[in-house]
Amino acid sequence: MSALKFIALSGTTGVTENLYVYEYGNDMIVVDCGVGFPESEMFGVDLVIPDFSYIKQNAAKLRGVLISHGHEDHLGGLPFLFKDVQTTIYATKLVGGFIQDKFEDYKDKVPKISIFDPEKDVLSLGVFKVTPFRVSHSVPDGVGFCIDTPEGKIFHVPDYKFDWTPVDGRPFAAAKVATLASQGSLALASDALGANTPGYTESERSIEGRIEAIASNAKGKIYLTTISSNISRMQQTINVAAKLGRKVVLIGRSIERKAQIAKDLGYLLYPNDLVIRSKQASRLPPDKLLFIISGSYGQPGSALYRLSLGEHDFLKVGKGDVVIFSSDPAPPGSKANVDFLVDKLIESDVDVHYYDMQEDLHVSGHGSIGDIEMLFALIKPKYFIPIGGTIRHMRAYGLIAQRMGAAEQNVLELLSGEIVEFSGQNARRTGKVPVKEILVDGLGIGDVGNVVLRDRHILSKEGIVIAIIHFDRNQSTLIDNPEIMSKGFVFEQKYGKILEDASQELARAMQKKKSINANVVRNIAIDFLERYFYQKTGRRPMILPVVVEI
Image (cartoon, rainbow, N blue to C red; front, side):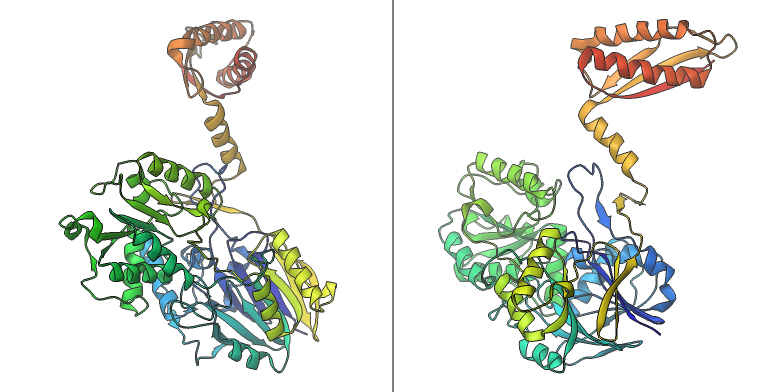
């Protein structure tokens, strides 16, 4: 007898990499397919992606991938999944545009994207009947899903809040959700990120007035930075510019592309002469310009990063100019980068408005305790599954559910890969799918592991020592003392003698050996130099012996 499986492949113990599987018999659907962002110790890693092994192994069952909204941690993994799997992607119009752009960015063939209307469409995917409904979030056109299964209805509601005055004028479809849940709901899998935040999350609408208050006092150029998918924030900024008689310039590839997609699809509204190109901007006075610029997370190489260092091709910033950070430095490792930009801008006498100033220039897209309680009250599920947060968020979410009458055992806090099976209106944990962290470094997917990261960590802290050893294979002897060079270990002009001494001592150590070959020479060099340099400096550089056999 078949049971409904819910598998949290990733997205429960971390805020990113959202990927969830629903499986019944020979049918399987996937909800969201996001990426994660590297921690600071993941040197050189570009992205972290979920482990798709289980989906690949069961690809014949896959009936479709549902994407809830346009953030990278919910759709950024699609090009990696679709290297090995082919199916239809289901999304709203704006999200579909972002997905198409994502595949084109990777120069991959764009798979079939089926656009649905959350106001009226119902999707039939094998045994699953999926009814999407609108939710409010920081990016427009987000949805939740009511998934009707042979075991009952499961509501899957990723990032959301109850915003009754959203910028796009399309609030959370609470009445539709209540109707869908009126005949009972088996389970709710929903956003837990705000489970420690009291009250209700503020409306996005309030941000526009705060931006206008700052902008109206600006004497020079205004730069506003936000994440490229935050179309609502772009709309608000454009509205402010129109009121103040400023022209808007979009700076940065990601901002330009997302804005163009949103405008083409009718989600970003403005007269054509309000947004101008950078070449036109050079002919206008500073007090007539407002730039929406990429780099809100302080990404090295981004437009704002280069601007702050005075390295942008055609933009300069200085006294009298204003920079507004309308985002939260949330991804791992980004806070230090943003702090660096803020300091550089302040050093250039720029009027900087940023997160630490308590000006409320950013509003979370995630529901707080009040929002979570309201969702629970609307749906009244038997089982509760926290998603999209960390361990502490899951626990706080569970406590909210218990305060509202849920049994403790009916809150399912899942680790990555854990399986819950629903059968006969009951749920039980039935094991775990093996999953691992997949790191993306340049063109390599999964070829950077702990060993490589450990080596990069050593290189970043201790540097490298290269020992070039000329070895006579026939005589089994050294031809000369090894040549030793270093990078990132010691300043050779000041500490050069330590390298000379190491060369002589290494040669003596090798001469004491009665029989040596190239492998022995290599091993002796590593062992001896590691101990020698630690005794002399207290450091452990990476030793790279190069044996030249003659």
